[in-house]
Image (cartoon, rainbow, N blue to C red):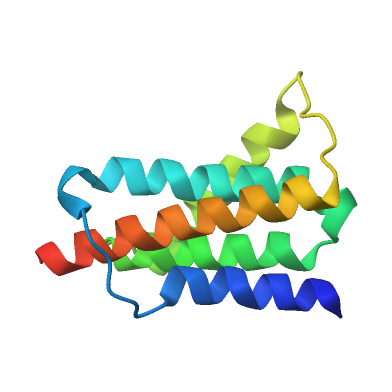
Length: 123
């Protein structure tokens, strides 16, 4: 139950309509890299937080990719590729504790949200 709140917060952070400032140095590739990091960290945090935040990160990242011009199939394929790369990596990430996971996920989600909104305002 408490982890469903984190999943909701992740989704809200990505899709929030809050006003942001300072988007002049944001690039499309930077937002995509941040979305990839969000998915990667959420994968690392499954033991500490469960699977729901991971699923929320995947869904949010796909939403951002679609908003940046990728088709639904391309967004899905891209995120699946990120996950395959993490899973296949010979060096698996260290387990993170719940507090560290929450902090990192919320920070990354906010970074993706701010970057996405800055790019959306340019259009």
